[in-house]
Length: 219
Image (tube, rainbow, N blue to C red; front, side, top):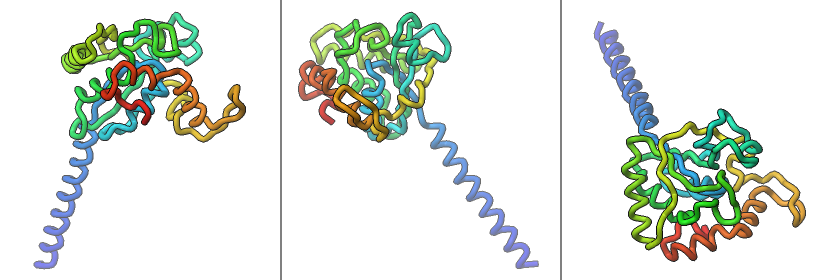
C-alpha cells in the first residue's frame, strides 16, 4: 500500500511538472509580437532586421493594397496599391517595438516620398502599418526621428493592413546559395543581393542622411 501511494505521489508530481513546463512553453510563444513596416526593397529590410537581437523572424511580403494574395509581378507592375513590406516577429522581453521603429527610421530615407534609393514607384515607398495598440509607439518614434534628423519625415503611420507573404523565392534572399545569371555573369543569390544593395546606394544614402546613427549600414 505504501509503495502504491508513493507511486501515485510521484506520478502526480511528474504530471504537474510536465503541465507547468508545457504552460511555460505556451506562455513564451504567446509573448511574441509582430510589427509591419515598408522600407523599400523587402530583401534589404528583412536582412537588416533579422540581425537584431530579439527578432525571431522577418518575412518579406506586401501590405496596404486592394488585391488579395498579390504576386510580385502584380505589385511591381503597379495598380494593386501594395507596398513591399516586412512583417517582423520579435520577443518584447528582449527588444521593444519602440526600438524596432527607431531602427526602422534610421535604416531608410524617410524624407523620400517617391520610393527608396534606386527603386522608384509606389510599391517602394516607406510606411509603418500600426495596430491601434502600436500607433502611439510608431508616432513617437517618427517624431523623435524627425527631431533628430532636422528634416521633414514623410513616412506615414498607417492603420494595420492585411499582410501577404511574398513567394518563397524572395524569403531570405540575402543568404541563398542558388545561382542566378546577372549582367556580370552567374552569381549566388547572396552575392547578387550584395551587389544590388551596393549599386542601389542604400547604405551610402542612409549613412549620408543619418551619419553615426545610421542603422545597419555596412553591416
